[in-house]
Length: 272
Length: 272
DNA sequence: ACCCAGACTTGAACATGTTCAATCCGAGGC
DNA sequence: GCCTCGGATTGAACATGTTCAAGTCTGGGT
Image (cartoon, rainbow over the protein chains, first blue to last red):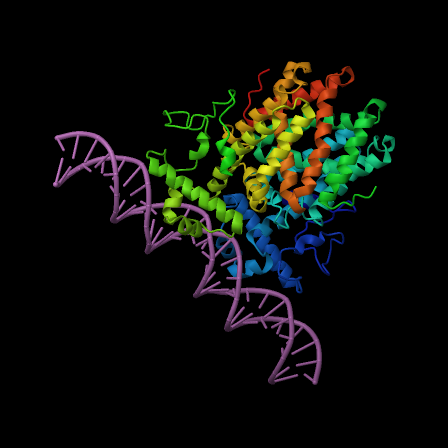
């Protein structure tokens, strides 16, 4: 995971690595401000940040090595050289560790995708690059990825990107898809209103891919990659076709449905 | 909830449901045979069945009264008048209780929907009836429904209707949607190949509604109902439009994608 | 130098899902 | 009537997420 983080810091929007970034942190101005959710308090000292990062780091390593269920909070604490209570001081539950990780991965993904996108203008290609980049970034964690998904599917949890309106990871991802669109040759040709909806829809599309990926048991999640290769051009085609007259009525209906029922659910105003 | 279960066992298409499939089960030919998954062994005595049912019944009541997390296995056992160990004898984990419940609800839904469908031929109407029936059947359990969903989202768990190929509840639901289609005036007009895919797709559509419903916090899940009222006609329209020439190529692509990548995942052969 | 407030840290205690060796019990064989 | 076998049942022990009252450390005020 670090290779990805190591190579970034170039584009304006990312520049994270996410670990330490916080209050008067030295570097990384645009750093994820969310890094601090799930803890009992805002970090006050430098040492605090370090401890927090150490715990997260350790947890991630153990999760990767043994899987989520098999990794006990006691093991994490022991391995990190802190007490159990201390771990809970920074992460109010075991699930929040996932959140911390998911946030970080999202930033890595955004950075990696932007790097790969440079120089490509074709919309379908750009979309495929962005999604494939996600799969690559997530690959090392496929083993315990189920936990992300369980978490995402729980409306009671503030960790869910579906229900938590201000989920920073989602905002980052949506923003990436906005760039996927605006950087493509397709953007100027589209109906402005539709263009406004698309970033969120493309994020939903990513969520579908994630669902597919989570259940994918093939080596290197090759099947998911094939699915993306095959489905992405179709998605692009549908978006493209939406410009034509025959599809006008159905597109209008779909747009209304999405504006009224889908976007509000994930925290966008339904205002036209 | 039992009134619903009592009314079924009528249609001729089902009769399959391969859960226990093996040794000749005693009674209840059309009854949910799935009731027995998650237990350590096949039921041998009558008393066994009764105890199992008692525990499930008690658990459901407590889940409804206090929610899933708040209901401890100890409480369930105590309330049912059995030991904790005994509960585990019949349900190998707390999650299997959910499964037991979900299975049952699915059968109730199928029965209720069939009753309501009688006499209606319009496809859009039939689809809306089937989906709305699900919402009605599930309504009492909305409080702890999140747990269904978490369970469904976990690929590691055999409880997931997505990954578990022989999930009997899914088979039942898919069968219901097949009837929704075949009983409609639309059926004979459709391309046979597409008609073959539709029951599964309509089930996936239901899963989307369920996702929406799980996150829905409005009273009586009114918002989900509105969403169904609004989205169902569109779904029907898309299916209807698929017959026309302009849409031929995109429909063909979509069909291929679904056949190759979606259906195999939920246990259907990709064979054309 | 002292003290204080508040961030940080600790580990034992608690709550609850899960396991398991031991026991109960009823039907069938003798 | 007694024995035996295996399903059914028990409850104490265990594993692990979580809490919390108490202790430690640090920087700033006096």
